[in-house]
Image 1 (cartoon, rainbow, N blue to C red):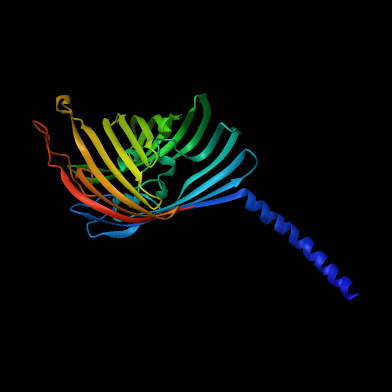
Image 2: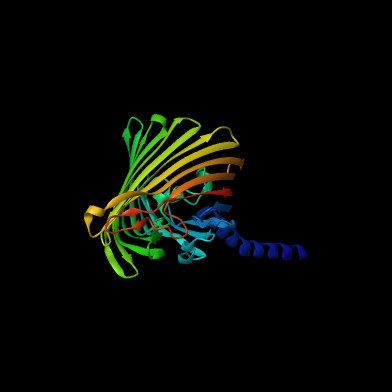
Length: 374
């Protein structure tokens, strides 16, 4: 009698526990969690830049937490939370402590075609979708002059299609429509201003061509959008961007990108580019080098006074030590000249009767950081 009661109790427990165990197993099969952390200490000499003050700061961090839930064989929901600490940067005032970087539904029509709806990664250039994952490149971040502080996500729709063209060549094209964000610091005679705007009615595309020679990827991006600041719409702007990534020898990766931003209301013509080299000299060590340059055009009522000037010229070197394949300790040093800093450095000292450029400023900064991801 006692044994039958025990067997009955065990049967009841099994009936109650089995569905919960099955649900836990199903959740484990459907849900994926990924995260990345990029934490550092930075210090600048002469002038603060990118939130790094001359007295130094450890309030420098990028953390992402991503959830992917599989709804079916062809559908999933993706959410990525973002925490950014920018030290003493004036841009920090425009960024929440925790933000939803992505939140989208992804439907795959076939292995080569898909559509995303919601807050999606903006397909722009080589590094935009992975710009916060520090284990993937030799510096704390990709070149800010090309990637900008914003435009990492698109509120709208992204359609993607990939196809092999033969001979080891593959083409991937993304088309998108929606809106994004703009954040930048602008120096002028009236002082340093934080410019925050919405990029509405945005549309465009990104094309990648992958070649079998030197594991080469060539990219071309084009977007057009309406720049909407605090005072309302300010006209349309166009942004072409061209990319190249290649491995001329196996341990060396070379990246280069060029971006041009043109628009109206007010007139705008900014050109930025960078070239970067990462050399994996062993399983543990990697060296990096980077040169960045940004040029801008000044516009005046008297168009004869319009002129171009070097807004930024920057050089950087980095040494990376891989504690594990997904844990990297980085030390980098940068030399910078120009007019783009975290304090006001207006490019002109005189505008009438002729335009006179102000002396450019020079400074250095370094960052020591630890990057990890899973």
